[in-house]
Amino acid sequence: MSISIKTLPNPEHFVGHKACGGCGGSLIVRWVLKVLGEKTHVVIPAGCMSAVGFIYPQMALGVNAIISPFAATGAVLSGIAAVVRAKGLTDVPVVGFAGDGATADIGLQSLSGALDRREKIIYICYDNEAYMNTGIQKSGATPWGVRTTTSPRGFRPELDAPKKDLLRIAAAHGIPYAATASVGYANDLLKKIEKAGQVDGPSFLHIFAPCPTGWGCEADATVQLGKSVVDTGLWPLLEWESRQLTINRQPKKFAPLEEYLAGQGRYRNITEDEIAALEAVRDRNWRELRAWNIHSSVNPDFG
Amino acid sequence: MADQSDWKVRPFQRPKNPQDWPLTPQCESGYLATSNSGWRTLWPQILDNCNSCGLCFVYCPDGAIAKGENDFPYVLADWCKGCGLCAKECPKDAIRMNEDDQK
Image (cartoon, rainbow over all chains, first blue to last red; front, side):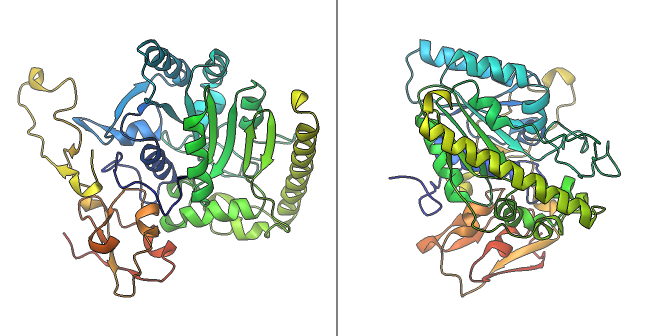
């Protein structure tokens, strides 16, 4: 039976952590551990989830877990996976939870190496679009126009500087499974976690995780923002499987961007012209995605 | 490890001598040294029109909502931070955020 919000298992492996109220990242860790079960081995680099999960003298995780150096999530993951393979264990998923900074900036070479080694690992990037643990600094995954403590007037580079496209980076390694997901679409997310656990080889998940503290939104807006970012077309739900791209959700008409931007303090000084420019970039991204989708289904070998 | 209601607080006695501090977690998993109950200002009250759909159990980032008899949810005072996500996502509006009276 495939997993959904109706069949989410009861056993709980992430309780009593010290994350802020309404944290999207901790919701993802909780769901992933529920789906993969208590034999999971977890690797967490420096970042929010290691700060809130490993609380001396006890830890909030009910599974085996280790803090890795900031830049070495992928390396530690493939090391653990190699031991699991050498001992002949078949029911031990090895999963890493890294933030967007630890994935897109600091740990990118390590991720690339881990994907290249083809061990059976699950790499999960929970993307809250800045370095939240150290005080909301701009990262390589911060979108245009966002206020952080290192871009107090809003991140507005003169050149076109998009968020790093981690799905394409992962897919370019030719791995069996890569996907994007959002906390707003729980069934889609749970299905993708389950799939990633069954794939033989490395898999990569890029998950949208709102951060009420860093984004200046209400603590109860996490799931609603996760929905509206997909409906406005800013975060496409994608799946890269067997060298073929699937777009899981294709809205006929995108919801207006204001709906998503309004509740967030980090977008407070964005102007109407800039919103129109963001819409144009979004439409261009979707044209490219659809072209990739068609191209990969016509000729999977060169997708 | 079983359900969230099995997670308990086991207070940690701070040793006087630095050499007595543990190098590893102080006890087996499933226990935590401190509760999070002091974080919240609001408390979710579950009303009678709840139809036990389980969405609050799914969406709680802290795992603070457990399923009781006939899957009817109840809130764990040690872990709830009062963020209000359960009340916002409840399709029946069966959760009301009140002033916290659980301390």
